[in-house]
Image (cartoon, rainbow, N blue to C red; front, top):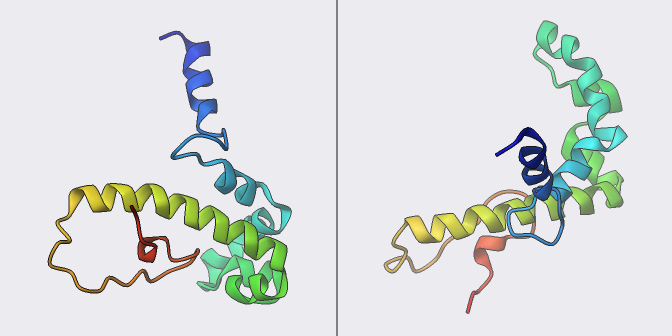
Length: 116
């Protein structure tokens, strides 16, 4: 594989129409509100406190409560990643004896969604 085709394959991961795409995650990571917290990295190193709080005056989840568009992006990103991970999880583990499975975390509870 030549260098250029390697980058093309890497770029495929950004396509929104492919399974396992990191499209939404890349959008979240490039949002100004998200990367602004990285500017406070040294504050985190020195104090042990989150840079996000220093950048925005509130914690990450509180910020998302106040900013529904950001919350929608984050939840969509988490759900898409969880869908990819959940498929691997279901293939790797025998869940036949499980009566109830709880999906704890962000996103939209993709592990709780029935599949056909």
